[in-house]
Image 1 (cartoon, helix red, strand yellow):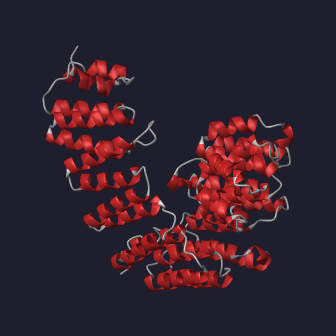
Image 2 (tube, rainbow, N blue to C red):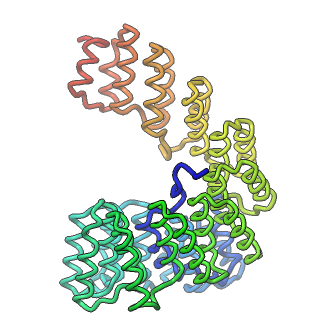
Image 3 (cartoon, rainbow, N blue to C red):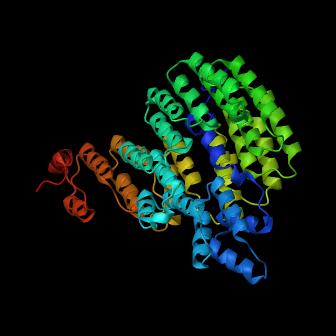
Amino acid sequence: MMAKNPCRLISAGVFLTRRFCTAAAASRSVRHPRLYRRLSALGATGGSAADTLNEYANEGKVVTKLELTACIKELRKYHKFQHALEIMEWMENKKIFFNHADYALRLDLLSKTKGLAEAEDYFNNLSLSARTLETYGTLLNCYCKENMEEKALALFDEMDNLDFASTSLAFNSIMSLFMRLGKPEKVPPLVDEMKKRSISPDTFTYNIWMQSFARLNDIDGAERVMEELKRENEDKLNWTTYSNLAVIYAKARLFEKAKLALKKLEEEMDSHDREAYHFLISLYAGINNLNEVKRVWDSLKSAFPKTTNMSYLKMFQALITLNDVNGFQICFEEWKSSCSSFDVRLANCAIRAFLGWDMIKDAESTLHWAAKRSSGPFFTALDKFMAHYLKDRKIDTAMRYMEEAASEVKNTEWQPAAERVTAFLKYFEEEKDVEGAEKFCKILQNFGGLDSNAYRLLLQTYAAACRTAPEMRKRMREDDIEIDSELEGLLQSVCPE
């Protein structure tokens, strides 16, 4: 039986190759594994990268810039952006020399941790000599990832005038932007422009070019690009090309062609490239092939002396997609018994799976086990329990998990999703339960207060119960709620002046 969505675990095509083009250097081994282990464990142990580095230095160990940069890139690869940024800040405080690539990396980490405005300020404060192809290209990529078309195109023109658009990097960023904006038809003309300027397409260019044709339902066009790549630039062909092609075929439900592409992927990949195994596992799960998922998983474990948390996460996700409950339980217990560094993402993944399979006791025991391994917080897990019990209309239980999340939150570091708030308050409106709604709103105050939507739903609950609230206007003023015509209409009923 074919999975309902055979591509659910397949990464969005636009991002597939960029991940490997930008992370190629990061995939090299870190020379000081002990230092990296300490830094990578900060998510579970707490503390800062600066304290860890100072402690390491005080032990008499010498750390070079090369080794620090390798640690930064590894942390970035695994989305540990805050700790990567903290290392760069420590390096700046120690007056360690930054080159152009370092400035670009710092800019990228700032955008990921503190937002685009901070990144723009950093770029604008760089000396003219530091505003290079690398830093311009990074800022352009930031704009493109935020779908800021006007700013991206303006910056591209500025780069063009400075002769910084003379490589494939800037063009690739703009192509990615157009794909995100649902404008795949704009990608082939950009490739034509590159060729006119004698700019050689790289692997990413070819991959996104193929994806643009696939998005336009032109599989023949994608295959023509592949043939051109083989014919004219075979040195640019690698395993990510076949991974990209497998995604295209799977989305088009051409599963036999997808299988052939995955076999070619295995022929091209380095047997010690962990990321390639991850994509194979995800892609085989996407085409509902459990036997191949298990075969690749066994190959991965044979190829490496240690199975990482990321590898387990990919396998967890694959087994969930394939609805292999027994296989998932075996894999989960294997991870629990062998993991030396706790990763909350895997616990969250297991909780989501167990709740989806209505295995409530397993989900609860997983949360309790996670709480013993880490100090948390566990907002994501608690939110999954909330969603489950809301779906089953077990409102009291859902509220208990909301209260637990409220007890953990500090400085509005997490807020319940808008749809979760709506689901709670809609329930109270349907039940005409004003007391329940007010109790829930009191909990919401722990997350920074009520917004206009929460007040609208609260007012609707009062109206449904034919109840009044004389202090409601005052409450809304204190929370800086702008009263529009809809809210005013409800207030006329609930809190008449």
